[in-house]
Length: 367
Image (cartoon, rainbow, N blue to C red; front, side):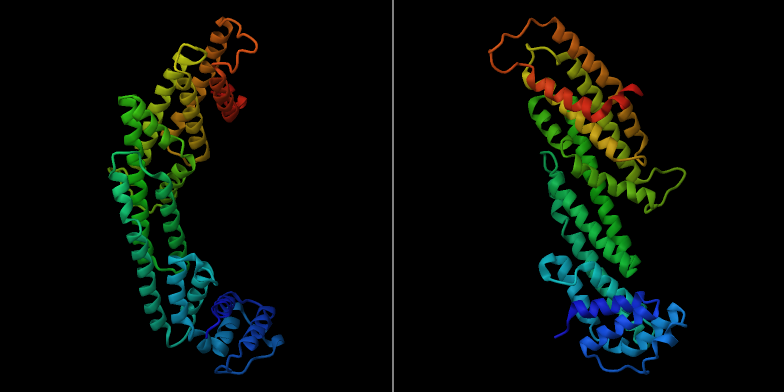
């Protein structure tokens, strides 16, 4: 029975070895595993200390490479298993991938065989990752708001497989999976923008609920949007002078919908804050959504598209006006009787305080 952790650690260690001390540690691992001697005797450590790192690694591979290589198919199978089920056991996917990459780089007659096996494993990984998200298309086509939590988790799973494929240096499989992950992210942002614009076009209670369900999931939206921002930064999609990349178009469309939403929410808030005669939750909901929009645009960072800069400016401009309207309305209101229970504007007060605290006085002053 192959000790996967030991084999993976040994292969990865040889691939990274650069000093005589590294060689000594690896020889101890070889002895512990009881591996047979290699094609050439072990050189003294003081001799290896004079070797260049590449020559030292070549010497170590000649000593134990054939024995370690025997575990290559098992490590491939383990990589497939541990990505499909993280409970499959040690070593984890990254450790296994690094070990396989080191073995594939190893000089020797079997290199072509190792590369072929690794390419097949990589394509299986990419294909499984793509097929695992097929059901999400149905979720995105449903009339209700998109299930952003499920989608963002799948985007993260795809990113995990992409990381492994990068370690394995499997560019074909990586490109296929990258295209799939970006397409899923674009569809998600497009569907989210459609939900938001449905509320803007017809702001009834059902549309309000769907809109709030989308806007409140800041972390999940960030996961999806960040995938496209990373793709733009890394130039994963070919850019021309005449055609806007699909990733950029999806981000711009989503950002534009958020700007329209912020303007509408600001109008609702300005008309309803500080007024006890308005539905109590209306202003509070608008204020909370404005806070979510601020969190989203703020956490996207400096690489965010221009639409999110416009959203940031809109928030800085409208929030002080909303706070001032609330103050004026509260000054006009008659004193609230002591002992009369909860103040009817308590929810609005809390929501406005959270919004002001999130944006901060410095941001408001520069708006």
